[in-house]
Length: 304
Image (cartoon, rainbow, N blue to C red; front, side):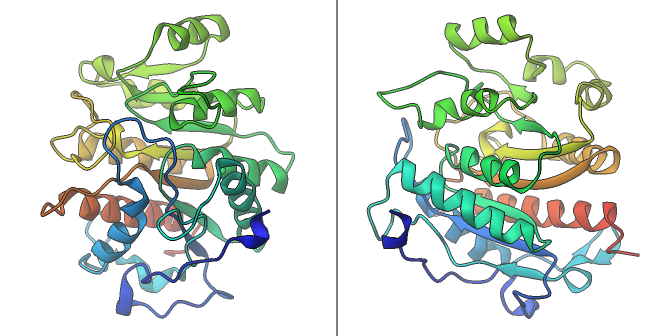
């Protein structure tokens, strides 16, 4: 039962730069430091705390948006849930608690950004949005891996299976940056004709962003970002790094266009696994989170 799980205190996103208010904030940061099925580098349960700590080093001014975004947008950092650093949490408990917490935050009008933690968390986040509304939405995935296995290492809740669970929910998907998958996943992509934008094509096709945007079949989008979608030269602190990933500005170009053309209902940033004595990954993840807040604020008129 989720009632036996306790929340964990965290430092606020951006720290003393803002005064968070749970009632009036338009954006909710939801840390979910859950790790149970990591198959290579471990440590993603430490990702949310590292990202939040690194956010204290961010400048409030966004040079692209030409605004101090944090002062125009209320940002509330929720206590951490499903925290495997301090308690035993099953995948089923995590998914149930995540779904309910996302539903509660989103139903109060907040734009939720969930921070992981392993990528299996996304199934619970997406379920929260399905519970919230019957309106269709597409799950847009930034990732190095397909994550479409039916099960892996004895569980259907493995991080390598999360997009299979999303497909089973009946939701359309668009995958961006993929460069590693197994034969089972390749066959499923062909069978169901799942839209996929390979990293190798992104590297050589300047118009890939418009093609990816055009492939999204619904106006509403949920965005899930596995940080290993970014090239490991910029993002070494992930569980399963793959060469040939998205560049920083290539990713931002896609995200800016996505928020402009579609209604992004929520998003997550997953799989940060900090590397000792190297803060580039958590700082980059924190800056990415701030960019997501900025693009949301611009798209919804909060920066007017």
